[in-house]
Length: 151
Image (tube, rainbow, N blue to C red; front, top):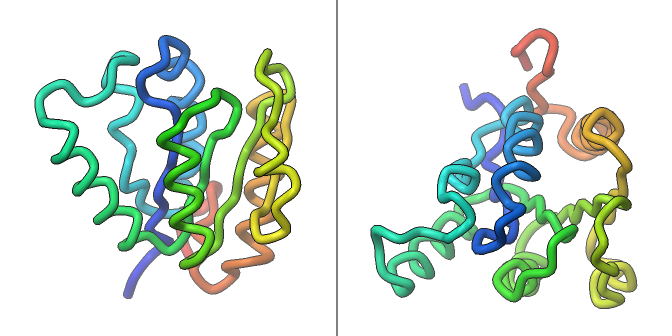
């Protein structure tokens, strides 16, 4: 029996802010399923340095196609995240999360796109509550509870 979902977490990787901002988000997402891209906070803000850009591209697209859902952190502007959202929105549910404390302005291409779900938050607890509500409404049969770890 499969437990949870396969989640593709998209976030800026080559930003110096990425490690601190993504680690708690990945921890939350682990409560809902397998995070295919959980390596993001370990790359120390510089992206994957042990493999070529072409290998990163092929690997990440493979994970994107395998995923049941994409959760994209749009708090830090990223060309790669925008590219991943553009592919994913034609294939599967996409939830964009935006930290209202971010100095960046949210793109109208995200906030104006009715095919995407946008969740804004002010702190990690609020994000966890909102994501839990969303997953319960949209994937009730595959949802893995944070509290029990059971379906």
